[in-house]
Length: 66
Image (cartoon, rainbow, N blue to C red; front, side, top):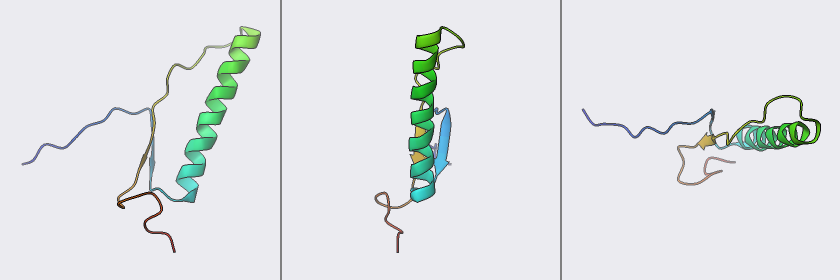
């Protein structure tokens, strides 16, 4: 049996369509906004480097678009 490549991520979006790409971008923006708020107010805990990945089976993002 072949070994599969393993990659540790915090959040995985499956599919490179509009919904996944928008979701990944929105999440990244929310994390940035949260961390800025923590820096400015001192309330809460800053989120350290969140690994967000988008998994797409096509040769490139959008390969299956109509």
